[in-house]
Length: 136
Image 1 (spheres, rainbow, N blue to C red):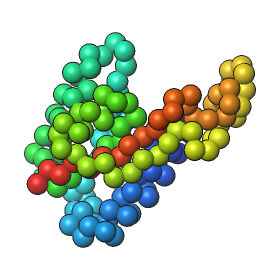
Image 2 (image 1 turned 180 degrees about the horizontal axis):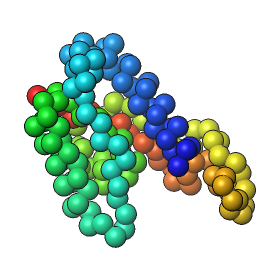
Image 3 (image 1 turned 30 degrees about the horizontal axis):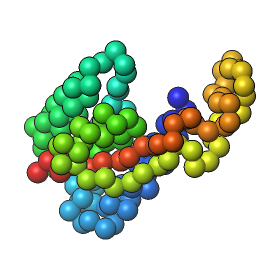
């Protein structure tokens, strides 16, 4: 999972810094620990699509109860993105999966090493969209 964490971590760092500088209200909330982070909302073929919405919506409600002003989440599937959009989230940063070769290229799986046939993190021509949901 290390290459995925690196991509998402870099996305978070860049976006949160830019948001904090550009939007003082967000920056103040972030500095005060009032920005929640819903990391890696899971979606598999075994999970009904409607559950992605419930996962995002219930997390936003929980963070609101805790007194947070915002919540950020990475959407790496269309279901998470759709849930965020339905809740009125703002798209703030896109990190494409195929911008840079980040894993070892190999046609065969290798023990203890993340590989892909062409060295890219995913074969999907998509990526991670970072969303911000205003709670307050």
